[in-house]
Every structure is written in structure tokens, then in C-alpha cells.
Length: 252
Image 1: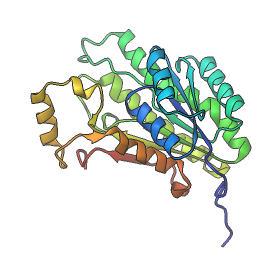
Image 2 (image 1 turned 45 degrees about the horizontal axis):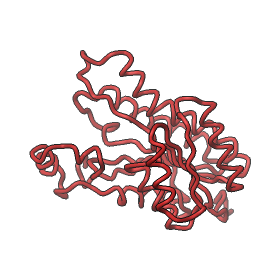
Image 3 (image 1 turned 180 degrees about the vertical axis):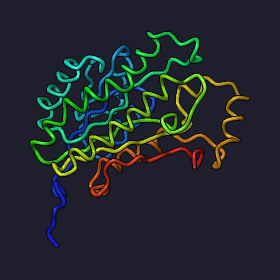
Image 4 (image 1 turned 135 degrees about the horizontal axis):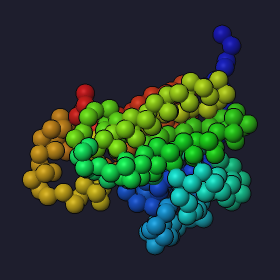
């Protein structure tokens, strides 16, 4: 049998993480740096948090870059800065995203487009920015951060659910398109994760959510980050177009 394992011997050295200054993104940055990788991460408004994260890691293998992922040119420039700084780029994690929950009848067109732009358009722009490089070098891995909201209906999240379902569809399409060129694209779909956002919930709401989860607890950002790292690694060399659900069994 002929060995056609594209890029099997290529090392993952440098990864770009969008929305990497806090929450799940910061956990991914920390995990990848701990594994010895170079990490460039983008942020938009929270420069102080971005600089604090970079400083806390105590290494020159981290580069924070301000970029608005909704702007295709801005993300292209971020990719160029990453490559110029580290000399390589083999991985992309699309994590940037927002929520603006409203009932469907109360949701404005602006709120709809804002979430679609931040969650879906930004991921498309980032993929478009890195894919030519990945194809040229015959190796690359993309992990798109979706959500179980892209798999199930959640009241008041028409915009968010649509953005995450769209992200899954986009990933599967690109995975098929670029598989023969040595580029893999996969999705991580977290459920309820212990982050700054969920910590704002009152105890009653948290208890209600935990009772719905078969494992009876929220996941940790670190647990999600480890799945991301796996999909970037050569341990997942024969995986593309897949959705890895990290939700404690909630949507099983």
C-alpha cells in the first residue's frame, strides 16, 4: 500500500489563535505554549489582558497581535506578522466570537449580523488567510471552535446557533476541499464550560444546568484546550471534517 499520509513528518511549530486573550482562547494559548509551540494570538479590545497573558507565560514564544477578525485585511496582516516573527505557521485555531442573545422577534438585524460577523465571517477570513500558505507547504491544521449550540436549538440564540452551525458546515466543506493537499480542518464543540461568562450565572441557574449534564458538572477550559491540541497534532493525522463534542454527555 502506498503511503499517502500528507505532511505526516511535518512538525507543528507555530499556531495562530484568534480571540486568545481570555476564556477558552487563553486556555488554548497556555496549553500550546506548555507543549513547546510558538503561539501568535489575536485580541481586539482588551489589550491589557493580552499583554498580561503574554507576560505571565514568561517566554518569547508568544506574540499578541491586535486584529479585528471581521476585517479580512486585518487578519491577513496578523498572519503575515506571525510568519515574519516566528518564520513559520502550521496551525490555526478560530476561537474569536461573541454572543448577543435575544428572542428571535426582539433580535435586531444589527445584532444578527454582529454575531454572524464575529463568529462566522471572522473564521472564514482567517481560513482564507492561512490556507494558501498551508497548501503551498503541503501541511497545516485548522481547528474551529463551535459550540453545542450549533448542534441543538437554544431559545434566544438564533444568531449564535446559526453562526456555530455555519462554522461546522464551512469546516466540513473546506475539509473535503483541502484534504488531498495535506490540510486538515476539524471542529471542537464545547458545552457548558467554566469560564468568566458562566461564572456570572446565579447558583440556581448553574445547578439547573449541571443537573442536565450526565457528568453533573461544567467542563474546564483546560479540558477543551487539550482536545484542540490533539486535533492540531499528528495524533489526529487521519482526522478531518470532524466535530469533537466536549460537553459531558449533554447532547449524546
